[in-house]
Length: 471
Image (tube, rainbow, N blue to C red; front, side, top):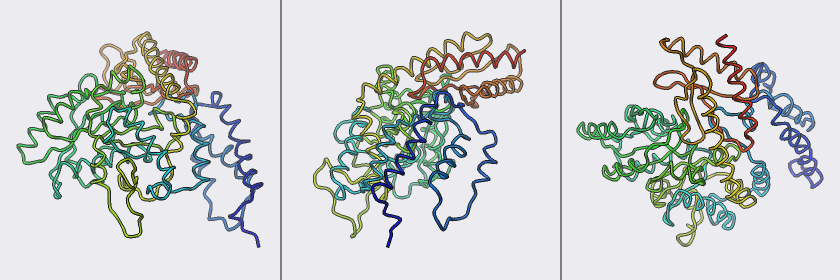
């Protein structure tokens, strides 16, 4: 009798070798691939609708489908020309770690199930807590991304700062905060109108005076202010809020301070990043996304909390079928700190590249991105009638073309056309956004594969596309 779910060593090698035979040329060709190609993608997707297969299909045909039909019709998020949204690089070292982790298939949600492997993941979280500036009382966990990290931060803040009947609680952030904060509040049970979006200042940051006024007005109206969220790198403009002043305000008002540093947090490896985010160590909790600033594949986020006990008080439940809690203060059950019981072994995808490469390699790459964004801002500012409306506070800038006396609708339409013509050249892919004073284009430099040559190509395409639009 054969057991197809139990392949022998030769079959496993065939599967891995076949995948590598496709993956290696793909990775080598990334700089030559279009920065984005979704033309006809809907039609391709429609051809892939299929019923549940009853029997096996040839492996080579399946690899053809993935590499030749499905993957090309997408944003090339792993390529050097992807300067849109917040890029995620996809380190191959992490892909190898995922192969090992999934092949081992060990469970690390509770410490007793795999103590040594759980310790490797705990090491990763400790590294991140140290990077933020927390002491040994901090704890945290790896999750799928910033959205779930922000959700757990809201839940922890609710548990620590509000009574059981929490519906009068109010949350505060700038109108530039990531929308996952509003979603986290909604999932945590708060009415949408309890999230106070404070209009940003001229640097797209959370302003202190209107924030204080909103808190005072809510207290006078019988609400219970409990949480303020600072941003360390917004998606629209890369803005970093004044975290020191927010920490002072939160302490004075007895509010939980959470910092969404999903985009910007790992710039703490650099001197410029630490200066920009001074005060982050005073936050009660911080969201970080290794799949952004550490260039890992998508699906790796993190929440760290200054008082690890707050995470446990918000998330821990026990059941008779679970093993006992780990002995001592230094070992954690991740299931007691987070929403997940069933979870993958995420830690190896961070631990392996950090150990193989060392923090210095990541620091150098992040410093390069800061340099490239500053260079790009200078080059954009030199384009006639182009204005950098949001100079880079980290590695993101926003800009537009504007003419004296024109109305906003005309200006916005021209800038949208400029973006479309840049992207049509397919060497770089940019995105735009709506700011309080109108539409703007964005460049976000955050791929380990993006270097000066690609940024020079980006500026060439900006100039050429604008000439087409304005001629």
